[in-house]
Amino acid sequence: NQTSDFVAANPFLHLSLPLSVREQISTNHPYGITQIYENLCKKLYDSHRAEHTMLECLAQILWDAQQSGKMPEEQFYLARLKEI
Image (tube, rainbow, N blue to C red; front, top):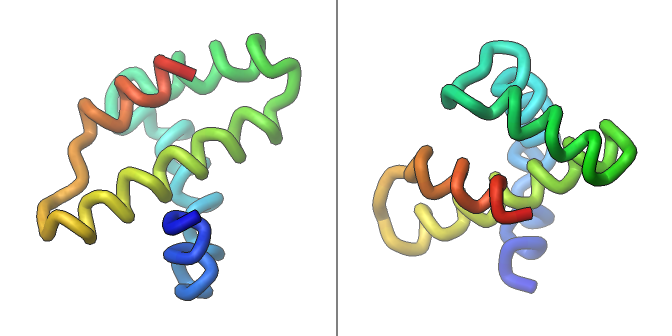
């Protein structure tokens, strides 16, 4: 898929996404993401799977932003995560 190609083509992005997700969780920025993470951990029964799911969503949001030439939208990102 296009998002996977986007991440694979950029090794720095591939390496930074897990760090970005962990930073978001630890700082609760964007606001509410820590609760979303905790909910995903319960739903998926695994913190690693929760982080990976969040990472995939973040990659999609970044790819969409790159394609549109706009900044990533935090509220859209949070809404997408809540839908999982």
